[in-house]
Image (cartoon, rainbow, N blue to C red; front, side, top):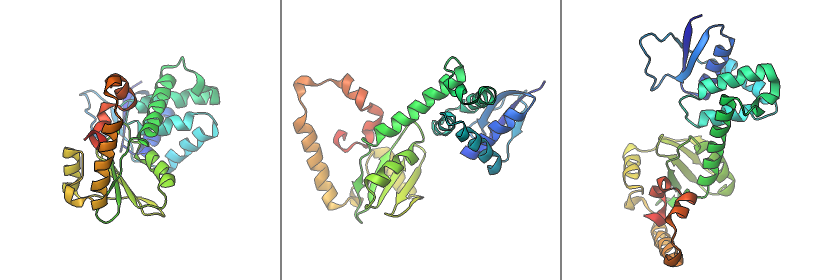
Length: 257
């Protein structure tokens, strides 16, 4: 049988459609990848998937009916931005077709174990960031929270702040992927931000001084003073600090500036 590689458009629906197509194929599947960033080898046999949302939905509904962690593995696997997640989902679905809901508890299987780890990483990072994202108040009263997560967790974080700050207007901005979500007090929607503004925030880890609300400047100074005042230099433990608040997140923390 020929060995083939499936390529999709990088969307969740595209990934699921590619996995569904691969599972149905009698050919030897060597890979399932997003087209963007993929570098084919000279002898690779490629199949470019044109995303069919209905095909993707059918697979996702099947995974949800299993009542286990299969659907969560698919969603969090996609949000992990892991390069190899497509093939691991492929093997998971094949196991589910044979074993049913018990397949996702088969931790001796490399792909099940791999997807479980990805899912835990995504959930843990989203939970951690809800306590580490710092909103700045802009001159018009809008709150703006920049961050650079390893995984694509902006949607999960937004669901938290949608409840926590439901009466406020705010923007969450994933600087790494340049994705932003805006909450107007009623609905959550994607928004495009000015490129120069984004470039400044990415470089300096802070919004331009001229865009800050006067009250925000005052509270930032108070917060920095408080952070310095409560620090006990005799009990300073940088390793423990980095364990709970990894250095890669410090760039957008007001108190670490």
